[in-house]
Length: 102
Image (cartoon, rainbow, N blue to C red):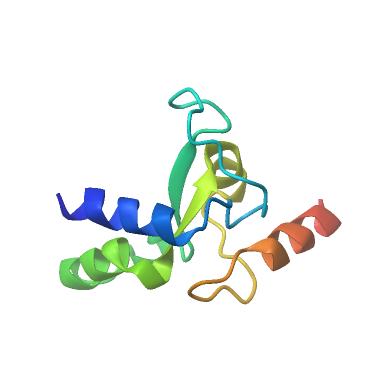
């Protein structure tokens, strides 16, 4: 139940915008399609694999570490951390930087 609430809160906080690409979310997108809405961990959970379980859980559910995204954007971001990510901002800096380097 905690994850459902954390997910719902992150999506509501997004203002209807993917926090990775900056484009509008598609509320009625087919589930698991490229444009369906997901919740991304800004700092990937891989970064906490060596942490104790309590720390892992805290970051897994933390609104500071969650942002709404399109499934496609989340998959492209994978387990990379965006540049200058912070609560309430999007990852446009990360997206721009990753496009420049690819």
